[in-house]
Amino acid sequence: MRRYGKHTDEDDIRTRPNRKGNRPRTNIRPKHEDAAEGLVLTVDRGRLTCLVEDRTVMAMKARELGRKAAVVGDRVALVGDLSGAKDTLARIVRIEERTSVLRRTADDDDPYERVVVANADQLAIVTALADPEPRPRLIDRCLVAAFDGGLEPLLVMTKSDLAPPDKLLELYGALDIPYVVTSREELESGDAADRVREHLHGRVTAFVGHSGVGKTTLVNALVPLERRRTTGQVNAVTGRGRHTTTSALALPLSDTDGWVVDTPGVRSFGLAHIDPSRVIHAFPDLEPGTEGCPRACSHDEQDCALDAWVEEGHADPARLYSLRRLLATRERKEGD
Image 1 (cartoon, rainbow, N blue to C red):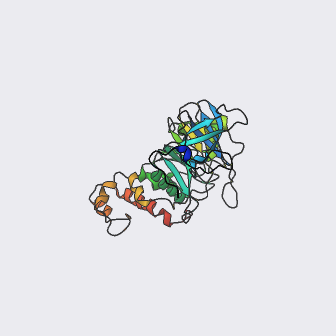
Image 2 (image 1 turned 180 degrees about the vertical axis):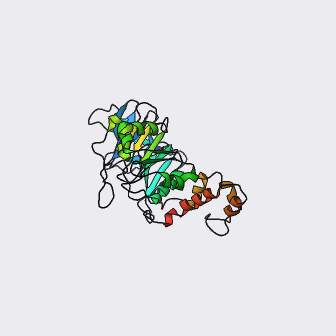
Image 3 (image 1 turned 90 degrees about the horizontal axis):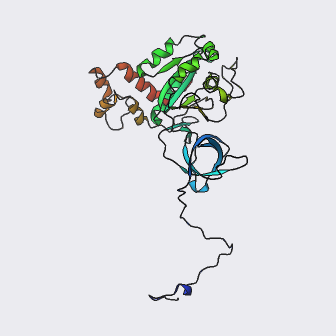
């Protein structure tokens, strides 16, 4: 074996020739300090439409990001051709830290979570009061996902000309969730959009709801220049709607600095990824009462300290009932 002294000449060291003639691999990645900032507007089969300054740019994810995927609402750094011209493609080289994440799974047994939208401030849960009938369990699940992901909920009830909203308002009254009630006539006249728009100023709002509730119709009224080609129709036999939105899409509001994110209609909202211990953070009036709870308390068991906390008058009993209803929603089917 050849040995080298202290004063070896680098030319004396044998190196293995590179048969391919290309540069050897390295773990050092470029910092892309000159990358442009962008906002992901929509994702379609690996191609991402991003807003860079005042133009839309088509981009793809750089290999160096690995399995990390960008979703609608992500703030990203891009390099390459940023002209936005036809047949050009930029690269997303960095995904900035997210302030909030709305996630769901296909069902409660599915370990794979899907990020629906990132960096949204608010989740507008759209439900029809009739045709199709409201599904409180689906609303509960959306609320849990919103609280877990750091989004503030907004309840939008449509088709009030077919049924009154009293029952739903009573069910969610203790949660102090802001709400808007609309009718089909108000949607057509634009009055409904005006009242919903009051809750959207300066915020990024994701709209979610199952098919046929009027979600996309409402988004079309809010952003008339970005109308979708079709709106949903409800099946008279099943009561279910037909999907008209196939991918999430971020749309700017024309008369405010807010954004609307239209998401595909959902038939289920799995919560396999949710840690129940985080839901209590959405109940600041109840959270101090958990200090006396046993370790890993589910807040719905015999030794839970919240019962005594509420009995002592520190919080409204209806709030505790609402918390436990939301925590138990993973154990109930959405159609119950």
